[in-house]
Image (cartoon, rainbow, N blue to C red):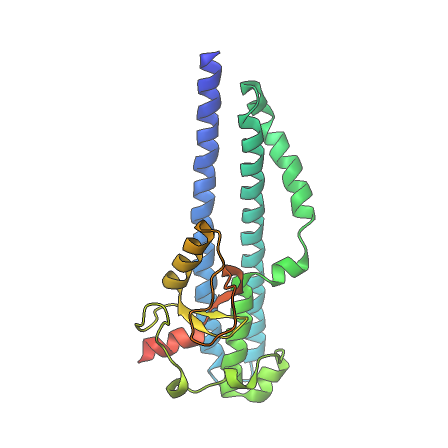
Length: 233
């Protein structure tokens, strides 16, 4: 019985090791999406008749990356769920792990919607940053790419406050809150969100006078344009 249990534990350890590798792959996908966004901003800031076609191709690349990232998330969730169930059963249950994961993944993957994909945080960030860049260079082109941003979003560099309201130092990776349009440095705001979650409390936007009483990670997107402005200073 002990040998069976040892084998069972080793098998679970191998599963978690594989998931760890997938997480590393996922981090690489995220880095790749950031690079594609940077390239898109370079294209958007350069005048040229072929720019629309290039931006469209880059958007397709972002969509494919978002889809892969979504599928990895789905797979990891399913594996964690199934292993949690199997852990409380007899060691022999491990032999059914593969078929259980395959069955649940197929079911969960089939329920993923196009809306979920389009709401991928990095895809949303890509579209918004490109739209802002086009609005600065060519307002008409920006309108063609989906107009939805407020007029005051297109502010000049001199009007922008690059100081994080949490750390009171210049931001490195400025995250924009889609709800209230305020910015915070990524490490600082993520740390605050995690701390509040551990306390089971909501996080109020740290900008004085802001009425946003529930800052969530899903509302934050990396502001690539502001990041480039900071890097050029």
